Length: 626
Image 1: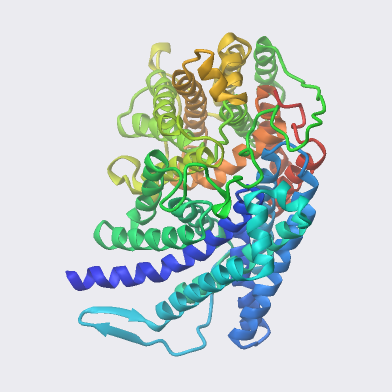
Image 2: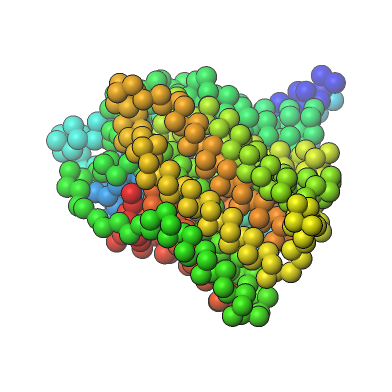
């Protein structure tokens, strides 16, 4: 037993070193630009695939392919800062964060088109040996990963402390304005940070490819999320903390996998992250000021916010907001309800039904991300709660819709309110990462709670909506389900808009703009945050319940982090805090792929490009942020 423990410790240190390298990239970028770089996972994936291309397609030796890969990805990191982030320097603080998200979406989808979505074998060019210490063991690949990771961390530490460029990077992290007054070209320093982050991402991608002996386009997101977690565990602004956080995360994962089961590997990791966010949000080696790489300035100052008043520029231009009155949603719902009388195609009706569901989902996200000011990266968990509630009650217990659908809405509200509790003391980056942890925990619960959710299999053949109070009325075809969806979505959006226009909505926006000032004015912030998350969770629960009835099949993959990012994209494009904009964006972005099915593989690229263009030329959303 003790041999198994030590073997898992050794394996955990090896994979933890990879997490540490990814976390170092996050820490560098955060220190200089006060930005969480969502594209870091995509750069990690590109590093692995560039090396794969050199070794397999071009026949290069692995060391040559690795060096070329690191240089290419480092250059892409510099290009990312120059073309996608610098133009947003004077925009809202949230714009650069969302820009890196859009870039990540585009890169991931392009990788699937270029290299195929399927995993491919990565050749290991050296014989692999296993060394035993009693019954504990370690492989040559583990040793290689650990040594290279340690050397990279040591080299980065030396560079930051001993070189002129490293000192300018640290000075910029401490106080960008003061560094600029002393003659430091801070824009070049930002490019240096992104270039170094790209190099670290590429190196870690190559090491992971050697560890698992395979590469696949979707590898960037899960390892990018682990890099987030490792950076936050150690301290977002601490280089030694990033290394310690990565090693800790790797050991916790391998021990959980060995003693609890493989399905609990990620669940333990994100649960640990949530615990740290609750009790030590600054991380193991960070401090409460979130100082940038040890500086007192806290990087560039304010934390990214969805506030309309928060901008990197002192000149804030007014923007026009297009917003429906509450009764407008009822009118739109009534008009859409006429569609089954005009259109007989079940395909078109189904596409519009899904569009209405995502309109409601985008509205639920904009309530949290726009009105409450907390960037929601894990909202698919609430969506999944609603879907699984309907599936369990209707499939497992045979209960009618008048019980199952309200239960989905109520349980979504309860889960949303409970999820808000750990976010009460968090703001900016830590609050966003808190929503990410909650979303991942929800997804992993759907995957592992076999007696209730049936694990990866999910539910097949979910019964059609049936109303016992209406004499056993059964909505079996898509036309009848269409009316149910139109009614529920219109009512939910109507009630949500009433709330946003009321004193409660104004209080939510006051908390978004300045939580401390709201406290000082006597606003019970915790209570209003709970109510906001409860309303948002209820809307997402309703959307999930409708999705289960329409789809007839649900699996955990429908509620992963990609789904959360898609909902956030819709909310941003419509205009954060603007319920009408979110609903329109959700509706349109769901319909477009159905209209252009022949180009379905380009769908996410189109989403990413639209988001980038909107952030550049319409940062407050197509219909205006509210």
